[in-house]
Length: 192
Image (cartoon, rainbow, N blue to C red):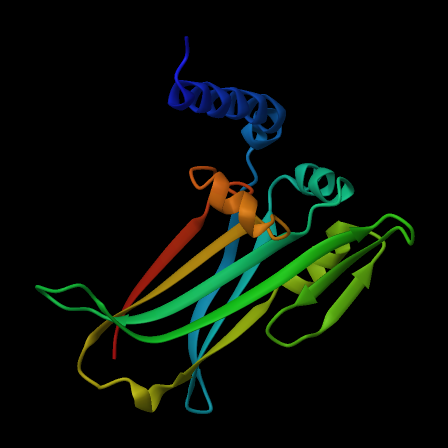
């Protein structure tokens, strides 16, 4: 006779196998985020980060959107002061996020900037992404906040996730990755 713990283990393994079979083929295609023209600049005394993002597999992104998935592009920029013996100290940090959806009734793609609250619409996801993500700007703060004579590093982390996954499912399947493709991280070292 099977014990209750063994039954739960078998049920969990069955769920993993079923979910793995239904989700693995799409995830195997791999959505890659490509960073273009990363520039760190001084604009009126503020630290400004400019960059562009391209996708290498828009067909896969369209498939997710046509299934009703809300896809979120999340960008996290951290300006860190480098230390010799300790972990680098984060001086400034900013986030930028966009939610992309497909409305099957209107045949329109919408992109909502979570930071500014601005929404864009287009008939094609290609034109929407080109228009919104080809030139992104993040204001990181004032140059005066950085003590002079130090070594710094800018770390930019960019990832795409499924934004509409219920919290209870994330907790139940804590071992499951909700990323669409791989998270990309970029590091730029500089002296100031």
